[in-house]
Length: 231
Image 1: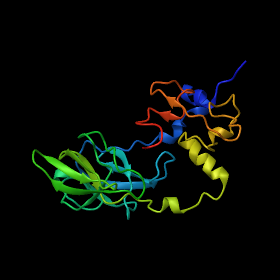
Image 2: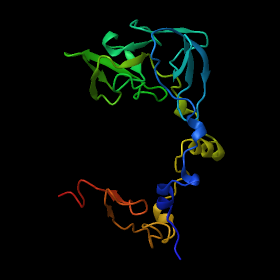
Image 3: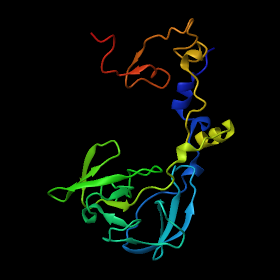
Image 4: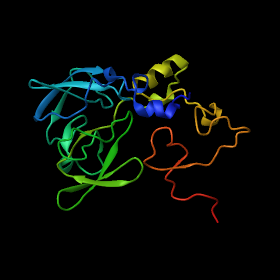
């Protein structure tokens, strides 16, 4: 009688290999209203690498990634005024301004540049209400001018410089995000636990897996563009 290898167990999505839902209680989004919002508190969320701001505009409460220099009680604008911390449509932001939490489609609440210490730059304004945004990878993307973004840089820069020190801290961090940790090299597995298991001298078998292969068979090269030595 065999046993499920670890990829099959993870692919099935049992309680052991499922994200902790309590980590995702805060949803980052933009409010439907415009006007002045106040920062009620700055929170830590296990699901986000950056600290979050809890904001209130009229009777509506929403959450956004905190920017460098944010403090409790600070007022920010959801308007066309391009100042640090304000939530502004891309068409109203001057070129060269650093922005984060950028919407891909107008009204989606922000999808890009949300990790700690990240930001993009408004590169140039194009025709037909299109804005070019320069990403940290130096790649330029074109978005609608009606997409909103927050002006500034996400707080928490330098997060990766602080060591975990203890394995226990790393364990709970990875558990909150459903990351597979500690990661064991496949060739160190027993032969029954992984297609690359045992190794018998660490000779890893070459394997080209189909893209639609089930968990457990999807190991090795996943639909590689080419194989073999370059000639």
